[in-house]
Every structure is written in C-alpha cells, then in structure tokens.
Length: 165
Image (cartoon, rainbow, N blue to C red):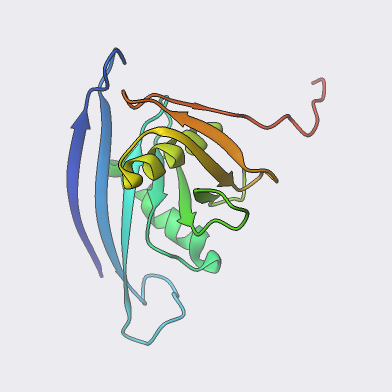
C-alpha cells in the first residue's frame, strides 16, 4: 500500500534566469513494500524534497531510513516519474562536526547534491551564509556558501585520481 501527499513549492530566485521548482512529498509505505525492520504492520512515512540544482533532480529524504533500506527506498522513489528524480540522498545526523550530512544511495559523491543539502540546511536554520556539509564519497567536511537569493557555491574535493581514456 502506498499513500502519497505533496505540496508543490515554486520559487524564482533573484537573477537566476529560470524558475526553481521544489516538491515536498510525503510517501507512506507498508512493510509489504520493503523491510524496514519494524513490526509486521508498521508503516514508514517518508518526507522528502526534490531540488533541481542544474538539471539533475536530487531527492533529499528527510526521514531517517535504515542504510540497509536505502537501495529499496531509492528504487521506489525513482520509479515515480512525477517526482522527476535522478538520484536519491538521505539526510542523516552529522558525524564530523558538519551542519548537515548527506548519504547518497550508492555512497557516491555528488557536487550538485552537496549544494542541495547546503540549501536545505540553511533554510532550516532560517538564514544563508556558510554551511559545513558532510557527504558520502568524501572524507572531509566541505564548505558551502548559501547566498540570500538561494544561489549556492560549494567547495569541491580534489579528485582521488584521473586517468586517460
């Protein structure tokens, strides 16, 4: 059983040249949909935001999800074409002193997802400025600057290696 409710938020950041569309969704899955490690008739409601930083929509899951269920949850979320998601990240408690931590479904690093997480954290605290972001696939805390118009600039880690192809 799947229940969906959502609120669509439209914003036009100053000087952006285009609309930014964010969706806030609530999805509720029963245990039959995927194992959440709870009681037999447990349901899991997922609160998420969809953000389009540069043409690749990132679904940010705000609800705590067991890492063992990341893949199954991401497959379900990406199957909803109405969400328009290309990738899924899970907002989890920081471990190394950051303001926010984002675990991508596959454990990878994504610079655009980092910017989305920084904007999410800045909006939660009610102001822009510097945000310290921890993200999967990167061993350091990265700095992002959230500007008043919603634009986000972020520090990128150095590549671990580069190979000729």
